[in-house]
Image (tube, rainbow over all chains, first blue to last red; front, top):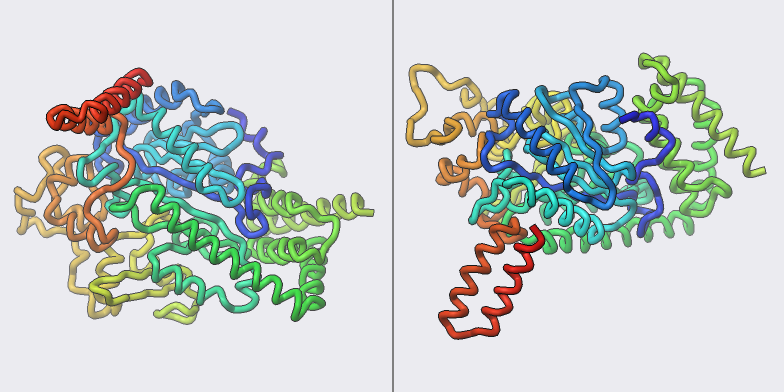
Length: 356
Length: 168
C-alpha cells in the first residue's frame, strides 16, 4: 500500500462534518479481542504472533466489510510511515514503536475502520466517525466484530465475557472515546470543574494522543473506564449523557464570551492567524494552540472565509510525520519548525487570495 | 490543576471509589512516569499495578517496601497459583499487570475477582457474546421452554438458532 496517497485526505477524524462538529471532532470505539488458543501478548513468542497475524489477515480479507480492509505489516514499514499512521489515529504509539515481533494493521481507504494485530491484545478493532456518532460507530464495529468472529475463535468466558490481556478491559473489551474541542471552557477557567465532575462518574479525560498525553489545542478525549458488568449500549448511553452536558457547557461559555468580550476574542483569533501566517519557526504545540483560537473564531463567526476543513488540514499537515512526507524527506527538529512555518505561511496566503 | 508532586500542570488524573470513599490523584506526565503509572515510552495504558499501589499509598517514600524487587530465587512462587496453560504465576501477574492467556482468568480467579470488583465494581459480564455462545444459550432456553410446554417461545428460539446458523 502506498501511504502517500492518504496524504491529501483529511482522514475520518478530521473530516469536520459530523453531528455537533462545532464541539465534537470525532467519535471512536475500539474493541479488544483475543484468540482462545494462543497466548496473549506478554507470553507470546514470535511464532505465536506470526500465527495470530496469519489468522487475522485471512479473517479480515474475508470479512466482507462495506470497504475492503487492507493489511499492512508494521515491521516492514519505515519509522516515518508508522508515525504518519499514529497521527492519522489509525494505530497506537505502542504498535508503532513500543512492541516488537510480527504485528500490523488493516484499515479501509476511508480510514473509518481499522484492526490492529498484536497490539496489547491479539486484535484491537476500531471504528472512527467524524462528529458525535456513538450509535453509528457502535453499529459499524458490532458488524465488523461479527464478521471477524465467523472465522476466528475468540477467547470468551461465561462469567468474565471477552478476555483481554489487561483486566481493566475485560468484559465488553470496549472503549468509546469522544474527542472534544473545548476552548471556551478553558478560557473561562471552568475546565477543571468539568473534569472533576467527570472523574466522579468514572469517565477518563485524556489529551489528543491518549493516556498520559497533554491536552494541546484544547482537545480532550472523554472515554469510559468500566468495561465489565454493563452492556455496550448502557456504557454508550452513560457517555452520551455526559457529552451532551459538556456540549451545553461549552456552548454557553462560547455565548458568554461573545457577549462579554467579543472584541477581545476577535483580536485573539486575528492575532492567531497573524502569527501562523508570519512566523518563520513554529512548534507543533504552538501551531495547535493557535489553530484552536482560529477554530473558535470561526465557530463564533468572528472570522470570515476560512472553512473549518482548512483548519483541520493545517492541523494534520503540520504534525511531524505529515510535514516530512509533504517535504519528501526526513527533517530534524529545527528544520521541521522552519518547514512548518513555511507551510502555514503558504497555505494561509492561498486562503487569503481566495477570500479576496 | 497542579501536579500533587511538583509544580507542573497535572495531565494524569486517577480517581478510585472504594467503600464510598473517593481517592483522587493528579499528576503531571513526568511524575506519572517516574511512578510507573505509564509503562515504557508512550505506552497506551496505565500500569495497573503501580496505580493500585499508588492509590493505596500515594507517598512514594513510605510505599517503597521492596514490592517492586524481582521475585527472589530463594522463595519460588507457590505452584497452585500458576496457570497450567501458560505458566503465569500470581507474582508475575502482579508485577506485569497483564495476564498471559485465556486460562489465567480461571487459574487466578481468586486474585482477579477482588481486583475486577475494585476496577469495574462488577465481576460478571453483561454485554455482547459471540454468536456461538448466544446460540448455546438459546438452545438451553429452548429446552426449558419445551419442558414448560411453552411451544410458542420454543418456536421463536428455534427460528433464532436456525437464522444464526444460516448466517455462518
